[in-house]
Length: 195
Ligand SMILES: Cc1cc2nc3c(=O)[nH]c(=O)nc-3n(C[C@H](O)[C@H](O)[C@H](O)COP(=O)(O)O)c2cc1C
View 1 (cartoon, rainbow, N blue to C red):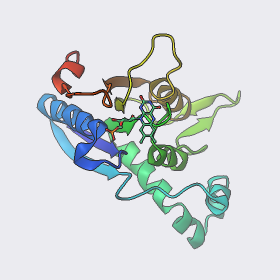
View 2: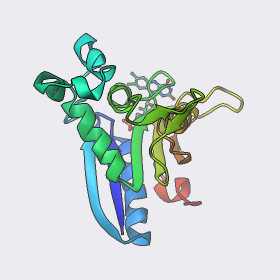
View 3: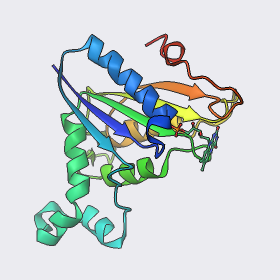
């Protein structure tokens, strides 16, 4: 039995291609796996807080020093860490905005990734990710199409973040490209043909 976490980060609701592509991935996962639980984390309806001075201070604090105020400031961060911890399969949708991920997705990552929580240091000061045996599916929508050889600031970036700071190394990417082209019609089955 698998637990799924679905992260939504486009503000365009039903018009969003990344939302629809991530939902299509979810459908396929439901067909293939016995599912125990699906948690939807909609980063647009329920926006992550920005990492401000007070919360960053708490991020660096030793857990033994936490007080009630710390718990309040870390409440969102702790909730999303628990969601990742419980998930076996994580589906993340994001639009391409100025070559990168959406703003709420970046804010979510900045709340999620934490030394001592998502990764720890071993005696040689190597980072050791704490979340293994999970799989991430990325659903990316972009108005244009990727150019061969160009830097990939979404998939490569997210793969590096997950590998370096959570230990998740299994990341599969699907792209709905050219959404701004005249007469564009999405073909989800073709994007997911190798799924
Ligand atoms: C602020 C903004 C920045 C964008 N930047 C890019 C970009 O750098 N490259 C690109 O191909 N498309 C870009 N687009 C187009 C979106 O990626 C495209 O509309 C995509 O379908 C949005 O995802 P969604 O359909 O899931 O909302 C941008 C759109 C907006 C509103």
